[in-house]
Amino acid sequence: MRDEELESTHPLRRMLHNLQIQEQVAEIGLQPLGPVETARLVEQAAPQDLSPEEVDLVVHESQGNPLFAVEIVRAWEARPGSERSSVTHVEASRPTGARRRALPPPKVHAMIQA
Image 1 (cartoon, rainbow, N blue to C red):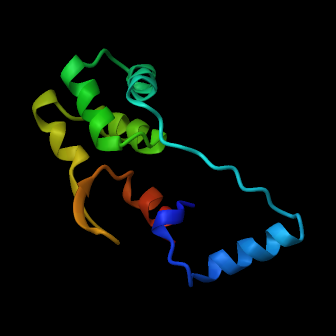
Image 2 (cartoon, one colour):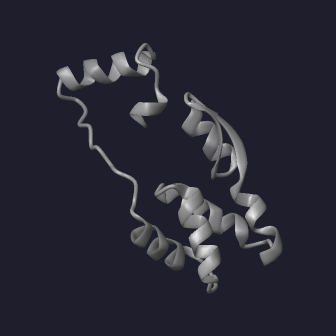
């Protein structure tokens, strides 16, 4: 879970706290991938070579989230190059306001939001 996306009063926070006290769960903090690492992942995940502009677009839109980067590439597989940029832009409401961000497929997004 992302700390910044879960309110301090959310029941999951209390549950995790209790599990940590009982030493039944360990929290591993992860930082977003950097641009170089994200580009490398995108190039490995792509079934075909992507242009430098396409790689840069995925790096920018995924914001270092490896799941988003891979899912953008997968969503592109069935689309011609001219339609690809539309896959990365989805309006999403964030605690800090609405902004554009890359999202995984609806089922994965629903799991993340749950």
